[in-house]
Image (tube, rainbow, N blue to C red):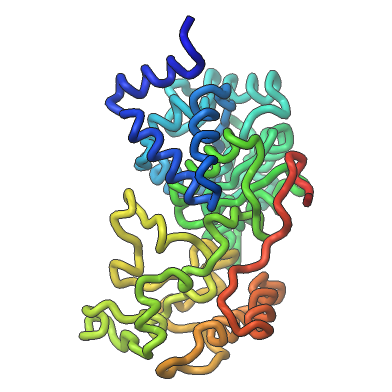
Length: 376
């Protein structure tokens, strides 16, 4: 009789993935979560031996950018994720079935695996005109979301549109677009993977963590995993040293721009934006926007289109620049400038903490969640 996981190992070998490469992937996942060395073996064992969770992927008011990001994933490839980590039973973009057959697949999962499947939502959910702005199979997106997310073991909102409403929810929001948390109040075990689009590595890591520990990693106050959203873009930015020495780009294409100096004066929102872009990059860590010479626009934050614009001007209402100036104080004043115009912004808490300590800190998140989604 074959030993546990032997079928999986044969499948990897058939695709040219060595055991060393597989263990390297598991080790990289453990590093992303800040787990001890022994966690690598736990992750490998879970991927090899645990049953695949069933997943359904819903597309609503979206550009399919998150799907495109997922399909271009590597380490592992999207095909490896689909075949080895999860079983995607419904995804209107990549599934072979269409029409009534496709919708029957979704219906069967919700009916037969109630409380046991994962739901992924891409795109915002319009609530205006009784949901008529987005319908799939003759049903309004809001009704589908309530049914599918309401019966899921957990829901993952991928991208800023699904997490917070995104661009469709920008003022004046003619379709009444909402993120999952607002459109489906009380949805169980919701995790937001905001960004425009979601970083495929963060999605893969979240699924691997869930497969290994049967719960999501620790989350911040916006239900985003701390391993990916626990620090500001500026904390790990490769141009940080130039900020600290007062070296800024003053004009696009100038010598400072060509030399890779700080883009803060050109509108970079890195100090008030939280994601791990500097660490994981994009396109297999080939590059990321700031490395290409473009400032962060804060796309992972709620209401970024309204709060972060104009994109090519720094946020108003805080002190100017100077050699050796303290980024934490500037970040605090930037956050205050945003929250003054848009009450309730979650960075108020961060600003108070930074002023109180005078040190670099990630935004404080809630205690790690239990399997039931409550604080421990």
